[in-house]
Image 1 (cartoon, helix red, strand yellow):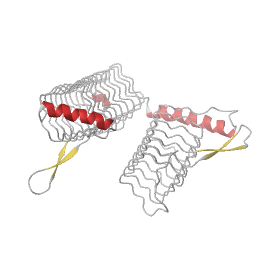
Image 2 (cartoon, rainbow, N blue to C red):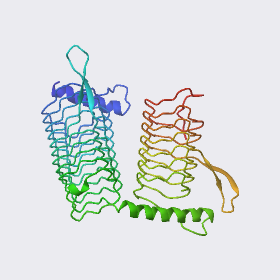
Image 3 (cartoon, helix red, strand yellow):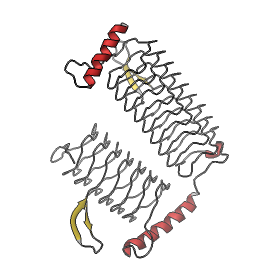
Length: 431
């Protein structure tokens, strides 16, 4: 394409974004734009699948919600570029400068490309951020599963709520990065500089840490199951308390909470376990009604048959948790991560609100699952009557036999859900 053609295309794309009748969405798929200076361009929602943008100057470019599947951006300058919610499956950022770029909720998982060998084969293409510069970049909520980040610099980067399962970060410098609630399970952090990093409520299950530098890092509430943490550098690091001490503390809190419930608040104390690491604990049959577990790590915990009426699980990590048969009436699970959780025959129903005298007010409080992650969760036979599932991620969830009467599923992702024989389809309704 000539520079004039590109300028004309960008103008038409701007009009398309504004809804003008003569506007046209920009589609630059497989075009070779290497070496160009497109700084400040608005490519929001543009299609750039397989586009060659090597050695480009792309300072401040707006790539929000754009499709850059398997695009080539190696050695490009992308200071302050905005990739919010962009599709970056298999995108190559090798040696790219992404200083202060915004990649919040971008999808950087592996992509698949057809191999031109006449057999219709597919080739897996991983997102490559090796030797890139991501200093002060925003990667909050980004999906970097299996991504290659070897020898990159991400000093002070925000990786809170990011998914880095199986990511390769060997020999990288991530000094001062924020990994709050991030999932680094099975990631390779060999010889990585993680000094002064915040791993508040992060998951590092089976993570490779040999030679990693965690000096002055906050690992106090991190999940370090099957991690040989003693093989890393831990000078000044805050580590989780011993499991036995943790169990005793939790036991005391639960007993006090039961007294608080049975006495209607006149004795004992309400359980406030915000940010605590309760992963892998056996809490089956527990009654935590009215408790606060905001941001609590309950991954792989056994909570089956528990009672959680009006419990606050906002931002809680419940990956792989067993909540089968649990009562979650009026529970707040907003933005909680329930990936792979077992909610078979759980009751996620509304609760009837009563006043201080116990008299019914005529009002009900539904379960809040707004923006909750329920990927591959088992909800077979669960009762979700009137539940708010707006913007929830239900990809691959098992909903066979689930009751969703009057449930709100506006903008929920239901791709690949198993619904079985349901009395009526899940409707997208305004709340």
